[in-house]
Length: 117
Image 1 (tube, rainbow, N blue to C red):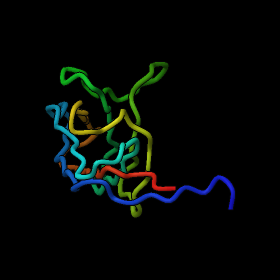
Image 2: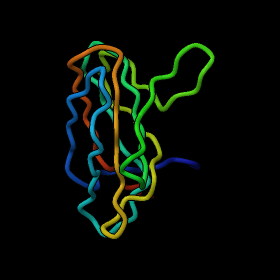
Image 3: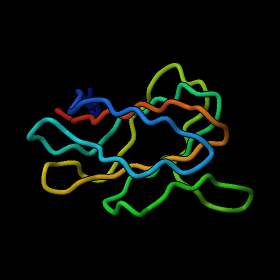
Image 4: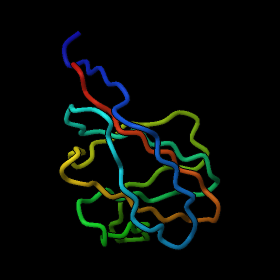
């Protein structure tokens, strides 16, 4: 069982309604004293959604286009959430999330995860 991580929820789930205009920065909050380095992401909408985590509120998510770099992209109509690394979430330093989608009306759910292994 080497290299097996055990994760648990580390805070309340944040929901963003994401469209073709960049969503304003929202704060991801933890509800534990543990250091939070991961988030669970789920996109239930019909469009791809670019997600950006930052310690700076003015950073804006960008959808990649041909030959350019963008931010992490969630596929449309996800059935299971995925876990990705993010900046450290704690009570002293806020972590902001922004998002933008390829189509209108996408719901993205974001939940902090704690690695307890």
